[in-house]
Picture 1 (cartoon, rainbow, N blue to C red):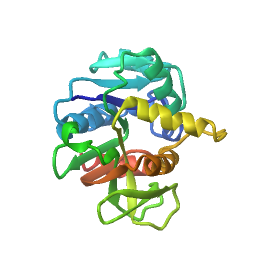
Picture 2: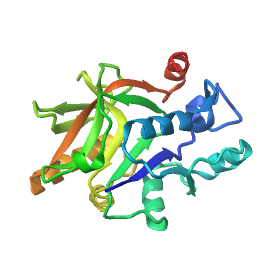
Picture 3: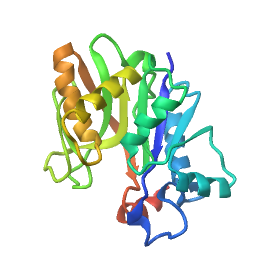
Length: 238
């Protein structure tokens, strides 16, 4: 088994205009690498047998990416400012294998795990999906509640006082499972951009029907570059 690995780079990153008026957020430099390259390195370092990473980009990112003369693996061009809608459009027109696992990454994450992940060993009759988390009370993170077996019980958007924060990595046993969850969400009249805590809430309900679980995997080390403050702080650590 291998998987579909998708790095989300479709957002405008408008909060970063004070740092760069020329480049989209995923192309900002962290040390001698672009932000998306740091995230890509984390994927390759922490997952077994990653054959290809898909970069999911809007047209502005693609235009600037070509200027850097840096093409990493495969680029999928989708004009969209909503990462989740970009996933849906990309899966519709790309050669993703719907029977393989789908692992989705935010482009502004840098992480290390306690143990490298082999997707063959993660998914089984009980485990339908997984989510990464870290111990934090920061208001910048969506939060989760899990049980003693590290199975997800519920998820919450930001401003929760819980201490388990969602790190931007989400795995699904099959791509078709992710698409099915999004279809359920779309029927609930979501008028705003769908965010991952919302997907996790629906997934918990769906798992109860199937008698499946979402595994919560704690990261060993994590840095986020999701806003200018965290970008300035964490780039010093790279």
